[in-house]
Length: 116
Image 1 (cartoon, rainbow, N blue to C red):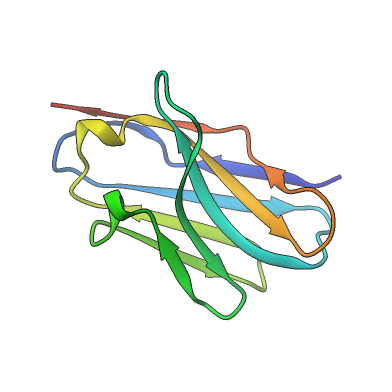
Image 2: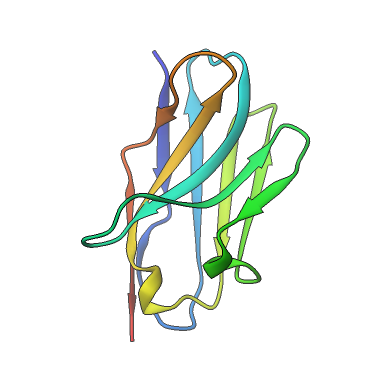
């Protein structure tokens, strides 16, 4: 059974940093990309950052220059380094595994709260 376990969320003041990690356990085949999404209060879930197997990253415009995604493909882990955090970054952050075939896998979510 596949599980995505996230960690690293918490409460931080504006301008601070957090690092989220996601570890995938179980047998996962055909991973196309790993990434992070977030859902703030009253908002739809949105893409934050994603990295494919070639190491190419894509970011939401709102986080470019502040967030950095990295992956260890062999270990099926993904990190999201978040710097210069803003109150509008407050959300539940979800790890995502996008597969070539079959449905995506999702983590349980980790809360990030940025105080002003």
